[in-house]
Amino acid sequence: MKKVILFVIDSLHPVVLARILSEGNAPALSFLAKHGTYFDQVISAFPTMTPVATSSMITGTWPDQHRVPGFIWYNEEIRKIVDYGATWQSVLKIGPQQVLRNLLIRLNEEHLNSKTPTLYEELEAGGYSSGNINFFMHRATHRYKAKIPFLLSLATGFRLKQEQVSGPAHLTLGQLIHPPFYGWPVSYPIGPFHRFGVNDVFSGMITAQLVREKKQPDFTVVYFPDNDKYSHEYGPLRSGPSIERADQQIALVLDEFSSWEKALEENVIIVTGDHAQSTVGLGKEYLIDLDYALKSFQRLKATEEASGDDNSKEIAICPNERMAFIYLLQRMNEILPEVVGILAKDPRNAQIAWKVSENRYCVVQGGTEKELCFWRIGPYQDLYGQSWSFEGDLSVVDAQVVDQKIIEFGKFPDAFNRLISALEVRSESRVIVSAASGYEYFAVGAPIHPGGGSHGSLEQEDSTVPMIISGMTVNLKHPRIVDLYSMILEHFGLGR
Ligand SMILES: [Zn+2]
Image (cartoon, rainbow, N blue to C red; front, side):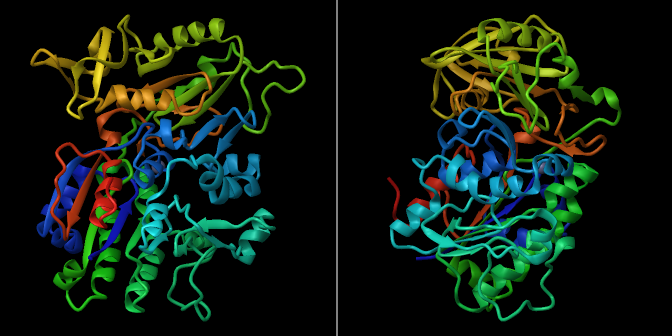
């Protein structure tokens, strides 16, 4: 049975990948594409944020099932905003301890639904070993004790007492959790200037080392984080150089086999992204200031608990770059129409969506009077075989009915399903906004990228990633990132 390696390049943009392939600047990816199947339109989860998308990949479910709503979200159970560390300011405000604990432990052990098994859990239960190298989502049955590097614990005060991190048979999370080396080989990029090992070169070196030492698990996920940062800064269309650097790391792994052909004889190799990015305009008008727009409401602060003594907080704004959740903390029936009314006046909000009642959802387009309501089950089918009913103007999500009963989505792929999954993740009442091209949301705690790249929205450019699958035959017609899960299980004979 061939082993499987899944390389995930954060914010991998299909147009840029196609360009560097045609320019001949990514030899490893070119080799894999030439010997495999190339998809340039794989649809990601919504919001198009890393924790959401990677949870979808590793559980094969949408957020309404895996229960990880975003990078910043409101958790009704503790009545507080959860932030995995979107900005340095928020890290300082919330406390580095909290942020690290959220990212390292709670995301996997508490937030990710225990009822949606991860690929590692399924494979290991089926008798296969699995491994994770720097990938956000690592829940499995093995327990690890994190070694907090001295400088990091000094800077954050972070110490893990009894808590342990769970993971598959092999787990590397930078310097925090790693295989037992005899000291650090000098060439490994670690320390505070290399994000304590959470970087592409480290991911590549550890993977190559596993292959070299014949310790490669049957299934390994390898995460390359650097392209996200690069693309945010320089804009997605100029992210070629950082994708080329990820390519060099993949080449390093392939080089551990006697030839690249040999690597494909022994492995299925998959390369994809979690989400892509789109370009943000330069200038203040491209920032949609939600704190200002919603200033008439009492807003929950990042560090506060809702319904403390005075019970005065009305909403919690949770910006996720080009989308935002506005949670309604009380007086739902009064506050909902007011919030929707305010947001609907601004044409920079491409969609404003909310849940009306059981299995009924509405969405309006900012700056127009257009409204659309939709629900599951009905006479209309989309290309994924999901069936729908709707009332109102389909242009709100750029959809149209073709061939009588076939519904086709244009600029907002799989819009109905993805909107519902973001409205149904956990039980909090909320309004969702998704920005038009070129805009992003600003509020306390929001990272902003004027003139750079951003993501999060329902729009095609944020939502579409390329995927290369080599070393196996593939039978996918309209791939979405959740399809990886069943494809990999089937490869190992564990399909259901
Ligand atoms: Zn990002």
